[in-house]
Image 1 (cartoon, helix red, strand yellow):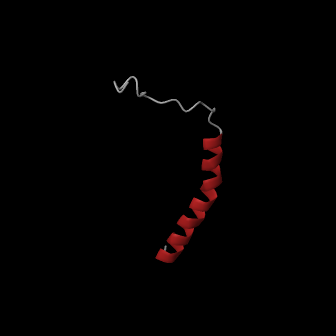
Image 2 (cartoon, one colour):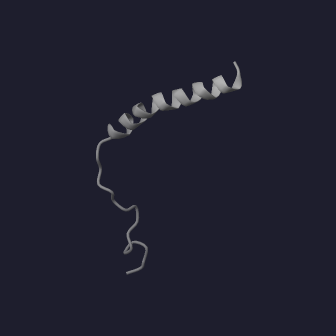
Image 3 (cartoon, one colour):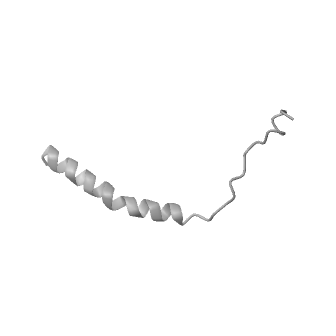
Length: 45
């Protein structure tokens, strides 16, 4: 396989896979963005 053809095939594969990746990320359940550690827990209060 020649190099330009491989590059074109890789680019086409990436473009084709992008909507699937976005759909997988959108399928996650929405969770509130809670902090792992708060200012009070860190002893800053």
